[in-house]
Each structure stands twice: as structure tokens, then as C-alpha cells.
Length: 368
Image (cartoon, rainbow, N blue to C red; front, side, top):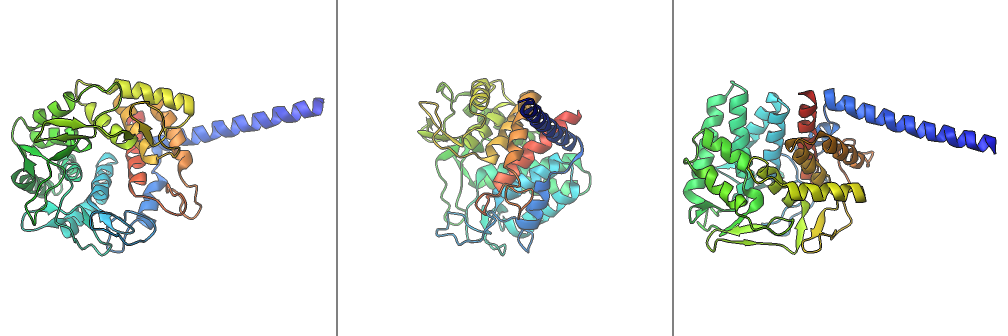
């Protein structure tokens, strides 16, 4: 009996020491390390021409408005550029900037094609507003951050912004997409696309009219209260907000992150997510809007990356570290792809890019 007690005590001690060692290593990495996810993206998610593949495994898209395999998205490019700015990696940013100019900018109006094939060719004539604003914001941040190439980045940002304001508006509002071939624009503005930090920077650099930021801030400030979750879209013609019965936490967290620069803080959502994480020890990827219960059982690394960003921006480093510690347990589970958030042999690039953004911003907050 005494031997068994000693053995149990030794096992518990070993587990405690192991856990403490892991936490210490993670803390040291947050202070000094470069995420292994960067190497994963460079080694496995980059096409021969340098564009970023959407999926790890190759496949063919069945429709023009869907994405598959090694196709490249303006969404991925914008997130990669934002990571380069946040990590103060000028070389990486310049490489991304060249990708933008070489493959994504479409003359004569320099709009950004939202999708390319693996060879870097565009077969679409539409943009994606949220990606455009993120890229413009990153260009302007880079121009402020590094003197080299400052004027060309400012010129590019202004040109893209001009194409948007001249073409991709309905009733005075930018909308989700514009077809630059047919001239058609949707009436819908998805709230995840209301990128207030980028719009702030754009107005500061005078690439949009004065008052533009306040107009879009008002859309988020006037969102109706729905106890907890935010609406999905705003119809700029009918002036109506719409909800989904099932909400995606990625969307909710993007809107919440944008709200952190306003006086309408996302306190209700944060409190709910902290309680959920404390109770369930995870954040399911989707919730039922009315019952506030999980609609799925799966987890998304993007959810944790965005939640870390929200925790950092809300001044809650303790919760940010808890989220980070859990998020990194999802990484590297497939030994063929160390550093990647790979499941069943595949991954979506944003499930690696959003975690990177959360990681680098947590790292920066710790170093302050």
C-alpha cells in the first residue's frame, strides 16, 4: 500500500513538473520566439509563384464563387501583410506587396481580384470589401512603419481606395462586392467588413473623404441589441440589419475586435465567451443565436486567434494566455506538418493566419 501511494505521488509530481515545464517554454516563446506556423505556411501553403494557397490539399473548385485547393485569396494576402506589419518583418511585407502588384491588382482600375488560381491567374471580376480594407490598412501602416518604399505604398493604397469609392458603393456606402465587368454591386454590407481600424487609418491618410470613418462607425454603434450576438449584415438600401439563426464565432469575434476602437465595447460577448471557456474548456465554432448553446462540437483555431486578439485589445492578458495555451494544443497534431493547424490531412489558411495574428499581438503585449 505504501509503495502504491509513493508511486501515485511520483506520477502526480512528474505530471506537475511536465505541465509547469510546458507552460514555462510557452512563456519563453511568447517573449522571444518566432511561431512555427510561419515555417509551415512558407513550406506547405505557398505555391511555386509565391501566392498563398487556401488549402493544404489540392482540389478543383466547382463554381466560380467557391474556393478549393491551391487557389489564392486576397483574404490570405491581407492577413499575411497584417502579420508582417505586426511582427515588424519588412522583408516579408515587401514580398507580399510584390504579390499584390503582380497578381492581384487588376487594371485599368486597380481593384483587387478576390481569388486567383494556383498559377496566379484571375478568372473573377469582383472584389471582396473586407479584404480590400485590410490590405489598404496594412499598406498605410507599412508606409508609416518603414521609410523604404513609403510613397509607392501610399500611392497604391490611394489607388485601390479610389477604385472602391468610385465603383463599389450603393447609396453612399461601400458594399461587400462590386463586379467590375458588369457594373453590378450588391446591396449588402457584411458587418465583418466594417473594418474600423483600417478606415481610421484611411481617413488619417486622406485616401477617403472626411467623415467616412464616422459613417461606418455609426453602423456598428446602431446595431440593435440582441442580448448577446451581433447581426450578420446591413442592407444599405433598406437600412435594415439581418441575423443568422446560427452564428459563426469567427464573424462575431471580428466584429467585436472592430468595436474595441469605439465606445461600444464588446463586454457582453467577452463575458459570455469567458464563461463558456471556463465551463467547457473550449469554444465551439458556432452557436445557436437564440439559445446561446453550441451548434457544433468542433473547435476552430481561428476562433482562438481572434479571441486572443480581443483579449489583448481589451486589456485582459490573463485570458489571452489561457486561450493561447489551449490554441497551441491544436497545433502540430499531424507530424507531417509541424507548426500547422492540420486536421485530417488538410487545413484552411485562415486557420493558421488568425492564430498567427493572435500570437504576435500577445507576444507584443507581453514585451511592453
